[in-house]
Length: 318
Image (cartoon, rainbow, N blue to C red):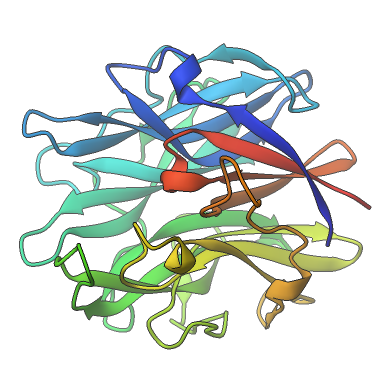
């Protein structure tokens, strides 16, 4: 693979965000229309206690991904009710067309006491072409299970062969925190599930991607697209601890390929993209999303500080 970086596409500092949100444009995810591309992202605002809440907004850009056309003036859906799995945030969202509707698979966050957070996957549906979404119910469609004990999230869904395929993460457990961050640190891996209706999922808790950094490697936000008769996956990975200030332990983009969506070969050296020597993505790259717009493939991703300065785009060179 070979990608040409086109630079920062959307910096939230240059735009008015929605509903009191003040920073971040994390985990960009595209929905392609005939004359523009809508890119959903997670943005943040502090609650009454100064802790962040994550909301989903979007920006619309031209189909060449060079120019911002408009920014949403409100979140696409509210957070969950008191005690719900998505009470404290939604990050990320993955949008998929389904007939005349648009489905949104969400990663809902809720705070915990002994560990910082728990996550699960929800489903919401839009009847207005993705401008707003309504949950199918207050609970998740995929949550922790006996084999996947915590932190189920980061869904990416594609339809192929008469079934829906979901690539997602699940937590294998918690480890002691590292320097400067004494809270327990989470470890999570990428897995695969299938469904005939997009609501009920069959999963086997098999880790798809082998570790590069040891057993405590964290793997996040898989995205999959087809090109030249093969499936290609991008994801981000990092060390479990000491990754916030130590840039050498922060997120990088990983790559794997498959011929059947089940068995994957990891080959990060063939990813065709890496951190820059200087600039907005010189310290980390994370939260990728690959998609086709016409006959051109693009890769959206966040850079330094987990997307505080927005997201950029790269173009696949064929």
